Image (cartoon, rainbow, N blue to C red; front, side, top):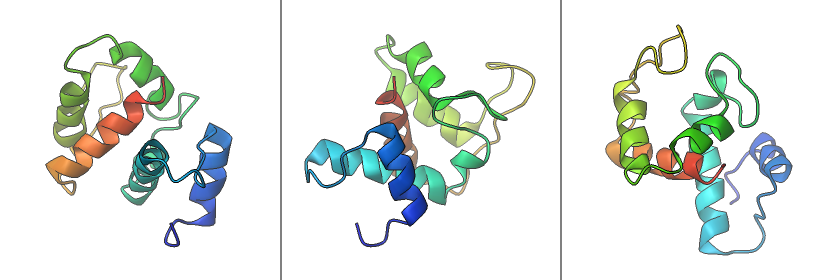
Length: 112
């Protein structure tokens, strides 16, 4: 927790993430947010509003009913895609490990 930036804490507060609770869910949410910030996901995405890419909340809502949503999003994060949300392509995130992509995908799905 000490390594989390003040910006991450502020965003977590805006999202209603309870960081002091110590629950596994709170830690998973904080880890997902921190990873998204570290890997520059937030350069193109915002949680609640479209930016260069779709809002993460909208992504979660779109795929929430898919049984394979976490796996699907993990592959979209790693491999990138085009044409799903408009004309701006999502680049492949080759700097991420499959475990990091899975963490991000799971976190995004909590935002619905």
